[in-house]
Structures are given as C-alpha cells and as structure tokens.
Image (cartoon, rainbow, N blue to C red; front, side):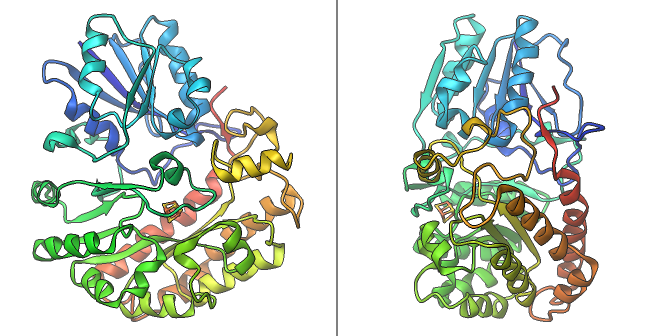
Length: 443
Ligand code: SF4
C-alpha cells in the first residue's frame, strides 16, 4: 500500500505558479506518516514547490487543508478522484466546514488525527474508507511518535526544525479559528518526549509552532527549565501577557528563546476590544511597557497586526507602521482581518450583511490574496486593501530595514542574531509583494 501526503499551495499569480520561497516543513503530515504502519509506503508532495505526479499509482491521497488553500486542495482532490484514487481531507478548515469539504472527497477527517489515523489506514487498505472520521482535539504525537522528517529531504524548506509542544490556547479572540477549534483549551505533550525529540535533531534552531506557547505560564516555565541545558536557539508564538511575568521573561531568555510571533493586532483601543484580545488589554498604554520588556530580554519580535476593525481608519493603519518602526520589530505582518468560517467575527459580519465574495472568500474565483473580504465600517474594502498593502510596503522598505536593524539590545546582540535578521527580513521583503493579489487555486 502507498499513501501520498499532500501540502497544497495557495494558488497562482496571473502569469505563473507561485513558488513560496519561505516555505516551512509541513510538520503534521510527517507526524501522520510517522503514525502509519511501517509496511505502508509514504510519499510527500509539496504543491508549493513541485508538481504533483497525479498519474503515479497510490492507494490513498491525504490532503491537509487550511482556509487559504481550500480551493487548491479541492482541485488536487478532484485530480486524484478522476483517476480513481480515494481522497481524505483533514485540517482545521475541514473541521470548521465539514459539509463543504464532504462534497470534494471520499472521506473527511474532523479534529486531530492522531488517535484514529491507524484505523483510517486499515480501512483504506481494505477499500472500506468511511465518509467521516473524527478525533478529539488533544495532545500531539501520542505514543511518542516521531515525525518522518526524512520525507522533507530535497524540498528546500527553511533551515529551521519545526516542532510542537502545546496545541490550542486559553484565550478567545473574536477572529481566531484556533480558539474555536480547541474550544479555548490547550493540550501539551510530555516534556521528556519533547526533549527526546530535540536531542534527536542535528539542527539546533527550532520553531515551536504552538498556537500560543504562553497559554499556561507555569507550563512554559517548566519548558524553559527543560530547554536550558540543550543549548538551543528557538522561536515560537506567544501572547503578550507573558511580558507581565518578569521571572518567566528571564527564563525565556536563558533557555535560548530569540523571540516570538506575537499578536499585537492593533494600537487602537476600540479595535482591541472588538478583537476581544484579552492578553493585550490590561492597562493598555500603546504597548510601551510590553515592548520595553521584550527588548530588555533581547527578543527579536515578529509583530502580527490584524487591520480592518470597526474603529480602524487609513490613518490608524499608518500609525501601526509608525509604532512597529519605533519598536524596531524584526518582522511585522499586516494582515487584513479575515472572517474565518464559524468564528464569532464571521457570524457578526453575517448578521450585519457585510460579507463580500458570497461569504466564501476562500472559494470565490475572483477573490485575490490579501484583499478585503468584508465591508469595513470606516473605509471602503478597496481602501482597506490598499492601506494594508501600503503598510507592508513601508515596513519592508530599505530605510525601514536599516532603522530596525540598528538595535543593540536585539538584532545586534550576536553574529548569529545579525545573520537571522538579514536572512528573514530580506526573504519576507521579497515574498510579500509576490503574494499580493494572487488568485486562489490554479483553475
Ligand atoms: S491569543 Fe492568539 S491563539 Fe489565542 S485566541 Fe487569541 S489569536 Fe488565538
């Protein structure tokens, strides 16, 4: 038996296929391959950088689906099904919208696949695939399974190892699909399992792709203690409330944490309330204290903003760029607020009849990447799209790069930090305009 694991691309530009040069390892597909019985041959095809050999004989195509890749994932599923290959779709988008997904596959997987994957493989082997499987959200890599990282060879992924410790998050931001999926809970792997996995790696630069590694401060402190002797450099995603726990900040620094992706979201107090961004709300004063603490601890932060709330204007979006430049963030993402299916934000906009693209931007043939998908309150959709694009362009300009780089507390701390700053900032400077306005899917 042979299974093809597929990571779909987002789509294409007007003239050619989009190749994502900032692509990272698709960790969860390697975990599933690790859970597959050893007599089954596993192959990985990454649509972001290689053509999928649809005519190669396989017994099952397993496709992971995010909202951004749904259109392309359904195209890939159709190619396999035309050739008589059964298809199973999984991932967060499928769990949020099972009815939509069921029309594009022989089987769908809702929730986390770990506990039920062996059954899926057995059923596929016996040609008895069920239309729907369900696994409860929970702890990752059960049974101490290790990802099949050998499948990543030759795919040109960024030189950092992806790993996971915590899944889910205790907060409930209004736009967040993670919070919806995990029902405001988080789950973590046993610490000694994670340490064992780290020790098996040659590479000592790790990205923990946890939804929010700081969801539980006590747990994060234990994690830092366990990491300290391993001599790693690591990054992750962490909510801003961590800056209010100074002993934890010290521990993060000592454990080799170079910085994290952090959702600042907005500097407009009304918008912060719209986002229900509770980790950012207490004593809000334009993040001055939080940024000072991050810099004091040497964090090379990647600030994530979501723009387009009911209190946002073109001017307030420009002001977020001023703030990010003053803070000398390593990277910043200026994301248009996206109504992900079934989130509180989606439902609110539906009630107010403010959705564009028939309320299904991820499938609409005319929708373009990074364009507004709803009617904002204080701007037109085009103004919101343009303001976000202008914010990205200004933040990634050459003068901005040099201004942000000149920070002895963070980027100039060591030769390796300098190297990381230039490698990733230049990569994002190149990638961001490439993606803007891209179509979803190939057809
Ligand atoms: S803190 Fe981050 S992961 Fe948690 S609910 Fe908010 S956006 Fe989602």
